[in-house]
Amino acid sequence: MCATGIMISNIAGYGQNEGYVQKYRGKECTFQTVRKIKLEMVVRDEQVGPMVQVVMDLARTGKPGDGRIYVYDVSEVIRIRTGERGADALE
Image 1: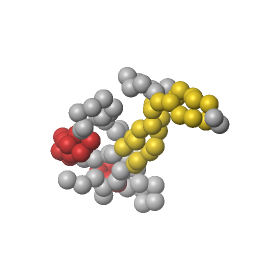
Image 2: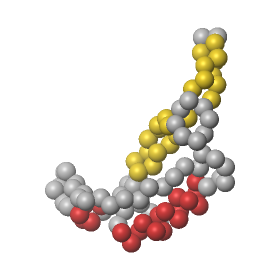
Image 3: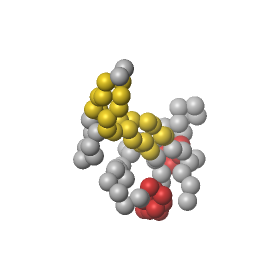
């Protein structure tokens, strides 16, 4: 199973995980946000289930902070360079 494209972003979030303590200019500072990695993919409908399983298999540690997967519909995909639309724009 392969995605035709993946967007990877370094983000900071706040949730059930506790923050972390870091020294800054000799003082301890508590940061409430936790650094995370965000993956974004757009795949064909028939690839959703298998792709979700691949991400779960690779990302699961069984510890808090493994994250969540959100699945939602994309109403339109347009490749700007060629003007292709829909599934053709995913290739």
